[in-house]
Image (cartoon, rainbow, N blue to C red; front, side, top):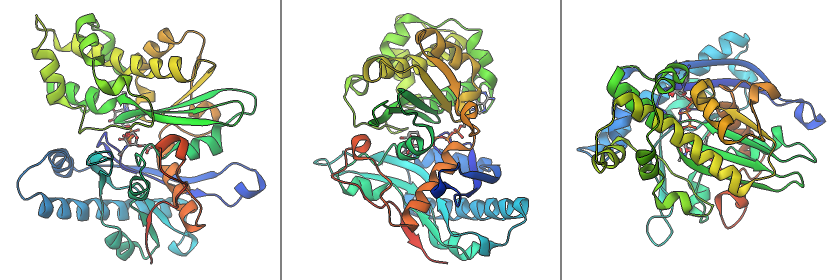
Length: 366
Ligand SMILES: Nc1ncnc2c1ncn2[C@@H]1O[C@H](COP(=O)(O)OP(=O)(O)OP(=O)(O)O)[C@@H](O)[C@H]1O
Ligand SMILES: CC(=O)N[C@H]1[C@@H]2OC[C@@H](O2)[C@@H](O)[C@@H]1O[C@H](C)C(=O)O
């Protein structure tokens, strides 16, 4: 998995064999490979239109899949397994553009990836391109982790919410009666990281310490929340296309006075927490437990702001329910690959708005 934070590739090797008997899945190995700085810079640049994009994105896709093949080798070495033990690789690719509802409702979502190369380099079946089928069926193509969250974290008789704090944030709302809803709440680490990198030169604000020392600004917070996305009803999804540093710069320029960079970081953290809290208050007021996953779970400032906004909700992490916060998304895409292999639908129409359940992904046989 390589998400919209653009931090790297997360790999997990997962054994699902016990699941049919009701037991939990087992993560046999996990690893993280940072994106080399040049590839990260290119992926960021390819998020916007630019010169010779087709050529550049094809080369960047190759570089990503070479990195993924190294991740697969590391996982096998860690678990002391041969490739023959692996049924398939699930590989998400890097989202460069996400415009699911663009033209007359039939837009596109674009994940940069070379599945053929990954199959060639590993000798394994590769399932990739998970999002496009749902978009073709009229859906958002995101979020897709909801079915997996449901399989793992639903509790009979209790309303539970699962929050992924990745480049963007998305929630899965699991109702006590078995119902499910899920959608993107708004931007998360992509914005926090971008501002921090610009002003401190650090890839991210470790534990949210910089934000915690700042003062959130009410006028900026109001301006950030003043976007149609936040009043739109689900199904909905977003990405760097909508929320990025240029968008933030425009909001800052419209303020009557300039703010200290640290206060902007504090406001961004308050903003992320607020969009999540608003989503829960509106769509899942009976939630008593929120399980946080993704790299944002290490941002203590963000978690503290969430707790303050949601006093009746126990804000825990997926780690408290048996799955490390850093493993959730990669495990979800292994799970979706497994669903593809079994020709099972991976989307939830209540979440994406697709016309029906669909088998997600394209297969590159070994
Ligand atoms: N110690 C930390 N303190 C604060 N933030 C952290 C820390 N460690 C990781 N993060 C944040 O987590 C991000 C990576 O998260 P993650 O891997 O879940 O994102 P992603 O895979 O891009 O997600 P998505 O696909 O949901 O966009 C980093 O870019 C950083 O913002
Ligand atoms: C288009 C795309 O890559 N969307 C990501 C992104 O990152 C978080 C949020 O926006 C979510 O909608 C999705 O990822 C998760 C893994 C998902 O599909 O469930």
